[in-house]
Length: 373
Length: 127
Image (cartoon, rainbow over all chains, first blue to last red; front, side):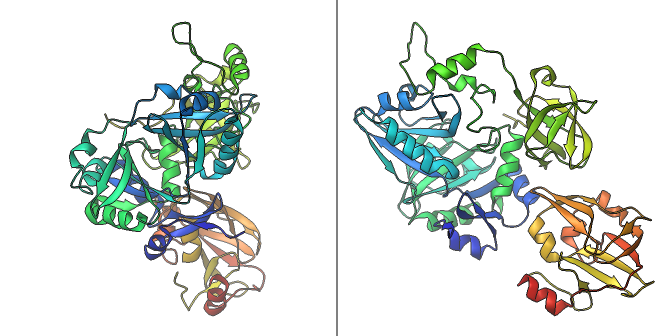
């Protein structure tokens, strides 16, 4: 099966990007260097093509009621022009995908899903919509998503619009607004991201994408460089953000990942009706944790990697690494792992089985990196 | 297009070999620019120790980059005579200068090497 191509494919080729297959898409893993790109986002700005992600529109009079049944969050409480991080769970409480949902109007929401899960999420939403007056549309092919992330992102995105310049700097975190960019290009701009820095995600039409990409580079000048999937992964890892397929899977509940707060069970003052997975999630909430998601930091040179065993000093397996890489910002190997609760206190010394050798690391609280506010 | 110096020889596992390619000769081994580019920023190099025996085509170490870990193979059979200690503090030499300061180890050859490619053949392999 040939890989899907982003509307920005030709830009990536022209920039000399190394392209790899990612969830069935041919995407840039890097342009210049993993560490250079990662550092650019932490110190100035990086430009990301996220067009492989899925965008699913939900419209209709029952939009809120439907989303509050289908997803674990209280979507009706999201204000106009606001976004919410949430998840879609299976009846047994397992996570099907983690999502960011944007409320574009009273009865119009856009769900952004991971590229690898878009088809599954779409099918589940359609299934769950039975009896609700809603229309569900997969807009992924028509929509491109370009992210500008880093401390210079506000200045750069401001310079990309004459008409809405004032709106950009003032846009609150997790808010979104319609913007007209230079060249009369319509964009839906959100102050969201997956890097742990200030940043913006620009939803534009696939047709407009190349012009917007080039506008960001032109306006950003030396303040911005294109960044690939490798930098995206080390940035989110440092920021303690879960990646579906690693920290979140069909076999994890939000509680396992320390994200129980994403579920809105409701209370007497503000009740919440039934939602898919409710019973199983209530049971999970009320039972003891069997594993805890923790951060790992090491002083050595070898990194923990997905699937590596976490052991105690005696070599008894106490957990498993979900993600790991050398951290460009911390200058040390870091990771995330599920471990038994008894070993989850920050400061606990553990060993990681790195290809046959026990590599010492220490349990640390997430996130391992937090930007200066 | 990654460069492929004419005066070196290459293995199918993307190592380059420089020096006296004959039994008793000492050669320097590294990974090619093509391999270094594919790996991304290298953060850790594990080379075989001085005095260790290495066998052509067999794993003798590893290279770790931000994204992945890759095995290092020996292109020849013999005994390791030196390792590049600078890589401990500057592993990115492998990316910056793969055919020069990015050299990884030296071997005194004990068995006549076979299967090494010239620049043109390696170029074809990686085209």
